[in-house]
Image 1: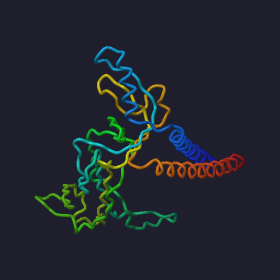
Image 2: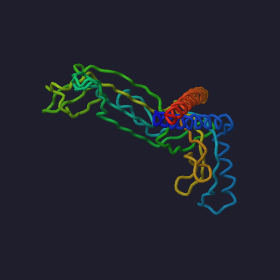
Image 3: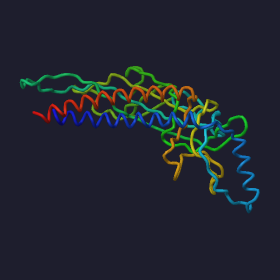
Length: 278
């Protein structure tokens, strides 16, 4: 019981940390005033006017920007065919496997248990910009960018599975994928329930909210990127959602995690005390 209590306290501490991080993100979103791309470009231009030609200013600042996604060479979603700057496509195989379980009395029972296996996960990117109507700014995204889910569809095996040259091929609209059978065909211990197709994108022309560092660099000029050096503690937010949507989500996440953290910590402490007294 002591160890259970300590584990609950540890989990509560982790959730409290995540709650604090969500609250910190919300704070910077509300405290940082929205900048205009034209103003940033003008400021850097003024600084460069007093410098030798071809040199970067080294200027950087933490800013909030709101605009839309602009992309000169967009990619297209493999499932949705929607023009995008970033596209993540995931295919999951949902299977049931026959497993043997031994109960407390030593009896062995056979049951079918559901599992989800990722058979394909692909991310593609194309250079893109934030365009707020006054100008556009190159964006260097991170893996943490919040994409918009445009496809989340379940398909029966009979609707998309085909055999080709001894290989199992999935055909879903214009999407085609050769997958490993993994002993599923003709096996008695595993069976496929279906496939889940998921696609998340950063759509071209869609809203783009950014909270991060704008810097004038030697190799790329003026770019929006993840905060560096002394600004690392500040959050980097890049999302296809609006500020209002992000604000609501951060408030809810922070509040829910904090409540769960407190409950786990209090319950864990009680169990730890009881366990220590025994």
